[in-house]
Amino acid sequence: MANEKIPYKVYLEENEMPKAWYNLRADMKKKPAPFLNPGTHEPMKAEELAPVFCDELIKQELDNDTAYFEIPDEIKEFYKMYRPSPLVRAYCLEKKLGTPAKIYYKFEGNNTSGSHKLNSAIAQAYYAKKQGLKGVTTETGAGQWGTALSMACAYLGLDCKVFMVKVSYEQKPFRREVMRTYGASVTPSPSETTEIGKKILAEHPGTNGSLGCAISEAVEVAVSTPGYRYVLGSVLNQVLLHQSVIGLEAKAAFDKIGVKPDMIIGCAGGGSNLGGLIAPFMGEKLRGENDYEFIAVEPASCPSFTRGVYAYDFADTGMVCPLAKMYTLGSDFIPSPNHAGGLRYHGMSPILSELYDQGLMKATTATQTEVFEAAETFARCEGILPAPESSHAIKVAIDEALKCKETGEEKTILFGLTGTGYFDLYAYQNFNDGKMDDYIPTDEELAKYREKLPKID
Image (cartoon, rainbow, N blue to C red; front, side):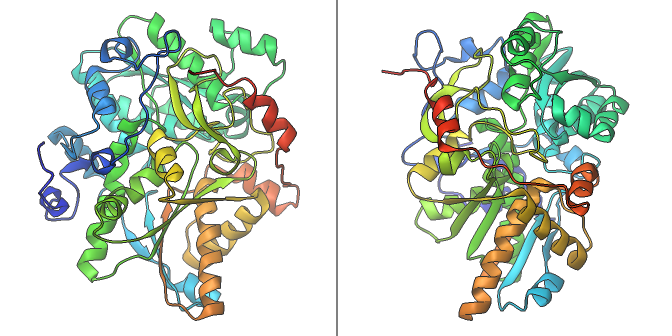
């Protein structure tokens, strides 16, 4: 839509559910760098992406100028099962902390997948169905994305092939079984079922896998199987576009009660939740209409923003995907086996990477034990067992609220509660039994992966 002069409220239903997705890139003066062909190092064209992605999703992926994309009626009908999602004030947490800060969270766990991932899963499955495809392939880390896509595919009658990071496949059997219940096939990655999987296993015997490994396998199967395309649950521009429903609803709710958040905090793995949450607020900042502080929180064991480099890198370990300019640890990076939850991708969304590089947002890290301590505090106060991913944001929200207690500032804090942790009880058990420990990669380890970054002229 041509819409530069039209306020976002035009794109809201009466119940504050968005009628259109917001494309943050339209308001960025400096756009994210384009994907590059790994062979020629030239910008990727739509026809080169067509064997991998659905046609309509490629258009969304490459569009830097259209501010709003209308949400198809079929997707809006599906969204009505669980949207709008609640914006909740954490009164009990505020009281527990004794802070003058006002703490709000946008809760995305009120659906069968238990997370925000369904917002993009149904969109990507819809466009695959509309194109007449038989099915889709994907990867999943902790399992939220695989669960969401399995549900969306079952709803639309599509086949779904999921490659699940091996350590999560073994630690989260119940999430795996939800996917299978929805009709998906789930394969632990890396596997012996693909050529890339065999190669990775030969080079890294006994590896617990990574999202980069699983992406490679899913892409291989998609391009070699007629009637299939690959879909991704984070990182891509199109995914942040679909996830903008989170931020649009949050902003509408704040406007309705006459409140403006000072600080917006989100966990960061590939960037889907954080990008969706901050989108309309960052848009205001870019247009000079309002100012906000944005904080990305990532695990200390997989610190793409805070210890990665801003460079072109492969999006996958098998090096079959396009090159993306992003904050990256290196496509060979595999998180420690003791890493609980998702947020295990070696890179970060090109959109968020560009915003971070421009100094428009901050980033910090949290260790596992302090993340689960924050999760425990939140659960006991607010009555929701949070996902480990979400708990990174909770940890920093608590920290910021305690700073307000020291200074007396009455800041309004918003964080993203991406989902529930009821399928993450193996990690909670380790924490409760005192068996959880923290792993932080050394500078020497990270330097080893950086040495393998592709050389781009």
